Image 1 (cartoon, rainbow, N blue to C red):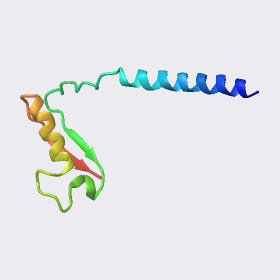
Image 2: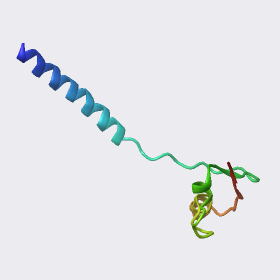
Image 3: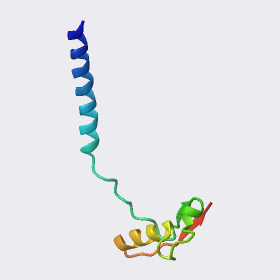
Image 4: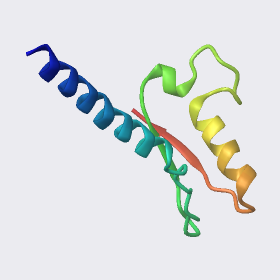
Length: 81
C-alpha cells in the first residue's frame, strides 16, 4: 500500500514540475503598436490616481512614460474610476 502512495506522489510531483517548466518557457507578451488617436485608459481608485504621490509617480503617469519610452508617438492617458 505504501508503494502505491510513493508512485502516486512521484507522478503528481512530475506533473507539477511539467506545469512549472512550461510556464517558465514562455516569453513576456509584446506591447502592440497603438493606432494614431488611441487613448490609454486606467481604471481604478485613489491608489491608481496616485493620491499623495507626485505628478509623475501615479500609475497612469508611469504607464505613459513606459509606453512613450518604447515608441516615438505620444498618447494621452486617462484615468476613470
